[in-house]
Length: 355
Image (cartoon, rainbow, N blue to C red; front, side, top):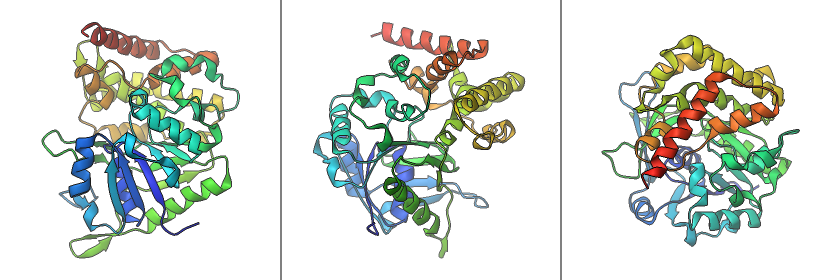
């Protein structure tokens, strides 16, 4: 394997965080994004503000100071065949957009290994789960047909556990990290493709950044796992916190969603854990509820799904509906989860009715 890899990241918003870590490790990253955003990245690079324990202010990472190189392009200007790995870092509904859907199909036909860092696991990845009937899950996706040409073994899932957002008062190439946890990625079917993930994990772990004159290890690592189910640990968090930020008339913070009724939160969290274990996960794959509840103490903003609905989005990632339908296949249901799905359904219907 060559020393420096060429990586395509579809999505420059959340993708900037993983991109910055890859650039710290010396790799080449191309971001796929809107033309105006691509122009800004090509002129100024990416900027990521990363909180570090023991420091009052976050560390400001600028790609121009990193050993790797980055550029950006619109979807129609990219040939995926020239890359070693493709990262899927957009929200699931975006993959049905004009231009993006065409590039996604080129990725599938080029047979480049793909690592998704969406909350919503792509349909090809779900096809890797033994016993799961994916034919019944298409209506959970905005554009299920966009995934039809992918070979399941070439798609893996990376849990997007770190929390980050674009500050509204900053340029579009700036990302603010709120919770600097690790990305957890499942192996590919093929050992040679898994070796790419192993190299990226090791290179990111070894990378350092100059802070106050000292070369410093920064948080947010890539952690490789043999289990296909480790990324599904995020489902409990999403159903307990992110989607419960959505309220009939607006949104609340993740902190309020979780700690407003901690007993109910615990019930949802453990129920989703039980479902993931029914699919085949080991108890060791999960994150304890207490650890998540503690992390939620610092999550003082609504989730991206709730913010999108407040801004009139007509489509969002529907992990809530996906979990509900997979649970039904396994003879499981929970009233609290049905309430979440119904609330999100209603908010989407209202936004679509407004045109």
